[in-house]
Image (cartoon, rainbow, N blue to C red; front, side, top):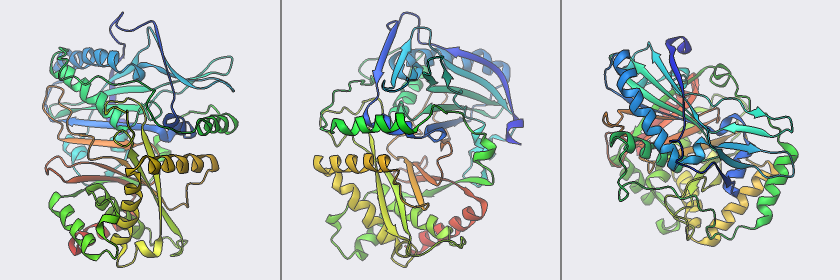
Length: 465
């Protein structure tokens, strides 16, 4: 059992430096944060970064751990929402983030008796081998008046004696999207590497300004809050990992830059409409490839019908699409595009073309502010109506633009980075390829029989195109 290989060595609490922040700080939730209140366990994000730096336990606890703790303390000063609480008061009050002096995050030091090389390779492995290297957020606390209080970040650093170590985090998606979370992690790494010396011209401060110029109707936000108060209960108990990942395995696939260019050319040459009608990026072609292979891997299910519409949820960052939002904006700033294509088209001979056309067209529509507002309105209405398509829903998470491998804490860049979605169902997680500039890594968690089928379809499609 994976959990039997992990032994907790010590547990700490880490706070921002004393006096570095006001006694209290609050931050309102935006429309993009509110939508994530509709989930329970699956709004938790986990990241694990592996460093091949052989150390003994004594050296690890005496030198590495103090450096990581002191730099984390300073990073939390600048990214204070992570050390805040999510406050969920009774109706009709609105939820908000609250930092109070004395707040801290859990910092666990552990030791793993398994093989370092096993957990960092791309081969098929039990999901639980990784899940126990990243911590789970603690359960919510409920006060007598019914107010629910939720922590937003937890950290676990795990030593593989004489092999390497990993830095794992568990964070709530309600407080930050992937881009903001990786901004925090890169800043923490930068502080640790520079011995906590800040160079203002190099250190990118996060922006917490919520007064950006986007004309989203206020009634949408009101309706989201109202629906949440009516239908959601303060039940944030994390399910057992064994329940979430029974019979699930994980594997990483790589699409090299040269192959991505071939896929783009193949799609361009075989598309009936002009290529200018769609947005054809590396993310689009890679997502299309993975989507059709995933749908084909489900062919063994007897209840699948070719007339069913398969849905893909593609999150799109709005920082570059809405005027006034800085690239360093902290929080959630993404809209989910729900793209539907008939199963018969995806599993057909021109499945890759059909997928790329649908995804690329939806993304291109976001090039205007009117398109952005329509996407936001469509997404919010899906939430309000609980309309997220059929059971054949596949999610895209992560991005090759997040620089997941750009996390040098002072011991070099990680030789493996894993971003996990806790209980998010069928999901592909994308990241830049560590060893091939312009390439993309795709991590998947599927049942064993589906992973075997996916692997076969993936390599067959790669050879054909």
